[in-house]
Length: 66
Image (tube, rainbow, N blue to C red; front, side):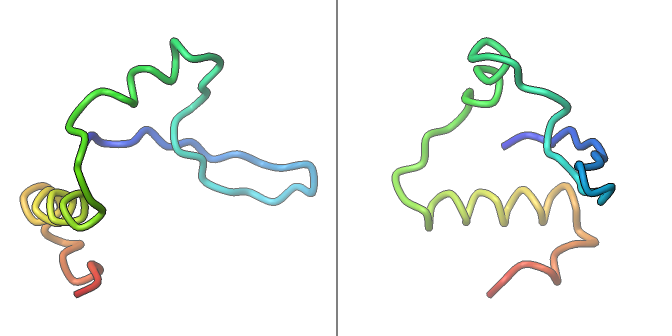
């Protein structure tokens, strides 16, 4: 689990949106996002995510589904 880099973008219709990461130009740029724990199930990944939010972003605990 890592913190994401976000950037605001504007599409061709002049609508803004938030993009995760600035740019991923090729596999070498993508490779940094594939490091870490490989969870065996979605439940295990969500449990780890929930723990991460509790530890690092306590103000968002109430936004997690139960």
